[in-house]
Length: 231
Image (cartoon, rainbow, N blue to C red; front, side, top):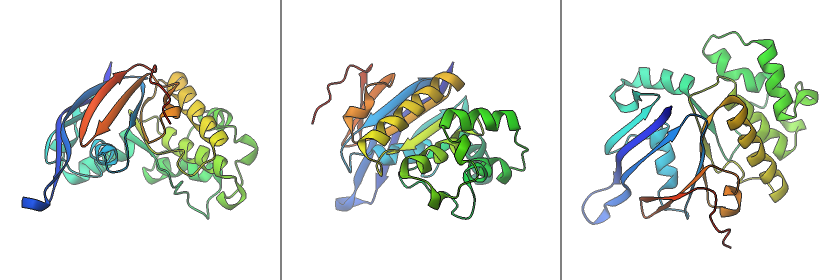
């Protein structure tokens, strides 16, 4: 079942001599439960790609379909609601609410949407995240890895169609980075979540299903997880 379909996506900034083609006719698709990574150097266009897919930026041309819904044929308000309900975001900066504890931070997207959480689903998620004994802790009482796991829980709680992870290990050491990737992999398998992660670290792509590379705005499909871990 196709969850994400990107067709001929282009994004241009500026005009004339200042014109920059950040994305050039990018096309690909992801199936339900697929975990894919986009690698690329700083300035390659990978963040622009993620922002356009997530509706945080508007492409110059092309289409983004999420579960068959055309993201940019929607009016702004409808796109905002769809994004809140259908897309989960994981950022490099954890962006937790400091006054809320772990469980409250995870439940925040549901409460914004006036939806009542199911306690058994919350408990299952906290178990998966390894945070059951930290559920009442504030972000300031957590390690970096625990904060990022909380942020992952916040992205997972609505069971969105698509999860977009923007350098989710950028603020973590190597051990916590591997733990976060393992957690995302488990979430992809357990909940059949479709996940698209961008990273500059090729060593983190070993367990994903597919790897793409962006260079100067051009996307190349590198296939399965047989990519060499280049330094």
